[in-house]
Length: 214
Ligand code: URA
Image (tube, rainbow, N blue to C red; front, side):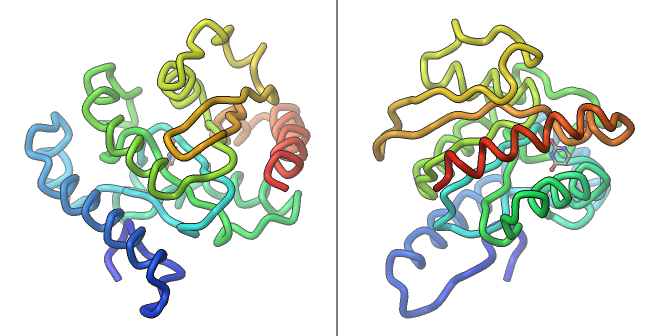
């Protein structure tokens, strides 16, 4: 199974296989995305693009920023230190990682873990849009300010963007192509690696996430 569209696929489940094929198409397009300023960096380092991972029927879609080194080496989102924090947060509210879907806005690793550029977000954003339409989650849990900014703008809620300190733990209703979706702004787990009080804040916000996904 190639990285990026794995998990929970049963051959006789028609709907699941349609989702699988649609996600596989995204993976193939990103693999050949020579127009990306990150393409050369990916291929010369033998990195993978990181498409996403988890349940294709998840009620929760986590959206991070972009892959780091561990992620680009394995093709899996949140496979490094930030991923350990994410796992801990999921465990704290009893949500198995394999029950959620995890992805990023930008699918290739930016050099030296720099922030993604507006051009990269614009280039990769449509792939995320398609993933949202395929998975049709109940909750879009944004991890960090880039994904929060992207998702609020996408759903015409940019005016609500008052920064992470004000927005974390707050939810917004939006209309997706498939119906209602709830957006929940969360701090990026990487911010909690050396910051216990921020981890505590994230744990509180994950309790809200659990309620929204019921
Ligand atoms: N940070 C992100 O935003 N995404 C990952 O996949 C890993 C670290």
